[in-house]
Amino acid sequence: MLSYIFSANFLDALLRMGTPLVFVGMAAVMGGKANILCVAYEGMMLFAALGGAIGSAYTQSLLAGAALGMAFSMAVAMIFAYFVLYLDTKPLLAGLALNTLGTGGTVYVVYLLTGMKLDTSSLPSLKFPAVDIPLIKDIPILGPILSGHNLMTYLAFFAVALVWFLLKKTRLGLRIQAVGQDAAAAASVGINVRKTKFIALTISSIFAAMGGMYMSMGYLPYFTANMTAGRGFIGIAAQNLAVGHPLWTMFFALLFGASMAVGNMAQSYRLPSQFAALMPYLITLIGLVIMGARSKKQDSLTAEAAMKLHPTAGAK
Image (cartoon, rainbow, N blue to C red; front, side, top):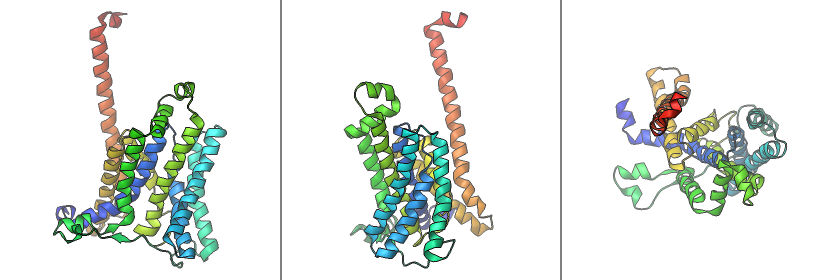
């Protein structure tokens, strides 16, 4: 097991498992910065995965497939935004409803198109290519680690840098954060809160779409029913553990990817397949316990400092 963890094969598996989690983690960062409780990323990913697969199959164009996948994901985001921002629906209920629609709706569309209920393997879907980086690919040991991965894997790391730049260096990013921190204060200085949240959700849906399309056009060359398998929620967990920081969200997403890779490897030791699915959630629970303990300790230190500054307050 240890020899596998320190091998190039493990890193390859980590990146394959972690790529969609990084994408949906960035989606969750954008939504979280706008203070939007969006749990609909699972539905966005599923519809995007289906759209990419059928779009590329019928047009034989990667760009057309990617465009259809993004359009499907954005449509889900628009429905969520309409219910939450305009009809004042509870975000959790709207998100869960759209996830349920994604689970059942995609299967129904697959059945209509192929007569099958499980996958689109009968359709000639396209797959994003692997990228061999010139010069680097020929370097011993380092070459196989850095080169030869799916195009979407490299785009996932680019997405992290893009989100960081957007939030830190652009007016739109600052407005999104202002709305998320205090919507009333943002509105008082002329920021359109509803429009800003709408834009944040739209950007989130694009990242979620890329994660979904990787599943059906990178990880596999076709769509299968419920193929995201909770990755939308795992991306949200990564964002929460990172407290919304893009780089730390990427770290936790890759950590979850590593846990999935280890879980899959554990099956060769005759451990049940459910062990692989359990690993990310187990790490999430451990992370939440650690965060809770740190928060409690910080609150205690703050209270002690307040008592020292105002010793008479405790006596009252």
